[in-house]
Amino acid sequence: MAQQLGALLALIQFQHPGWLWAGGAWLLVLAWLAQRRQLVSLREVTGVLGSARYRHPQWPLLRHAGDPVAQRSGAGAVVRRWLSYAVLIATLHGALAYPYVPGAQLPMPATYRDVMFLLDTSISMVLRDYQMAGQRVDRMTLLKSVMTHFIDGLDGNRIGLIAFSEQAYSVVPLTADYNLLRTMVQRLEPAVLTGRNSDPGNALLYALRQLARQVPPSVAEKPVLVLLTDVNRPRRDVDPRAVADFLRRQGYRLHTIGIGATSIAADEARAAGLLYEPANIGLLKVIAAAGGGGFYWADSADSLNAAMRAIQAAERRSIDGTAHYLKVALYPWPLGAALLWLVLVQWWPSRRAP
Image (cartoon, one colour):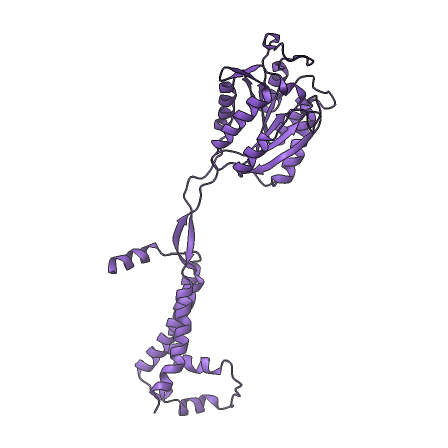
């Protein structure tokens, strides 16, 4: 039992230790007053509180005449008065110092920076120039599969989703709700809400406006943007290279991942009525360079997955690895002791009186 108590006392820390020093200073003042016989009993002070009293001009004489404790000239009475104040001050200042013991460990901050994905949903995403499990699949199916597996492997960091083609819209803001992210990824369909052609420049501007609302200006490490597109027949209303450069100067970093084959040889004869367009790798490399990021070509499901993992690994946050714990407050104990002491000061002399 003694060992457990000693271990508990060793864990006690104070959030405001200055109050302990202030309490020590008050004890010295009280000692000086006690030496000069000017220390009034604590019972007299607490007895005045909460009642209407009138002070007689000759109160010092009457007090010494009527107070049997005050008539005692021995050092014992002075020491008892000093101790009554000392206990009260020690307990009150102990509570003000906010004692605590460490509780449960708080979760460590996310290891990686937040990531905002911009997913191309133009009509060209229906082209089937990938193979998964020996079967041809379209670009959107591959993208959904890899995104879902990527979300499954996240650990603490937030990601957001923006879908775009001719227009852009926010699918999911920055969040760590991975179930929601997986659900919304599976609902993406090519050319359903945003048009048939892709406009990456407009999508990047839209992402910048969304992040300005979601990320406080005081945040030092801005989220990373990842543009997944084939950049087929992009509109030229806004040059994506200029927007990428502007993002870099605002503290963001932009990576690009090319979706789709780079050669007409990957065309599928069954895609009748839709002109096959290879991914524009050259433009994606320029956009990534302007955005201060890297370019990755997803020529297969494995390479797309590897590209996303490489981006995540490259965007580790600079975090403090020190463990932090909840503070279990102990100030009610000294505060309760102070209240109990005040009650005893009032009650004990009355109990001893005949």
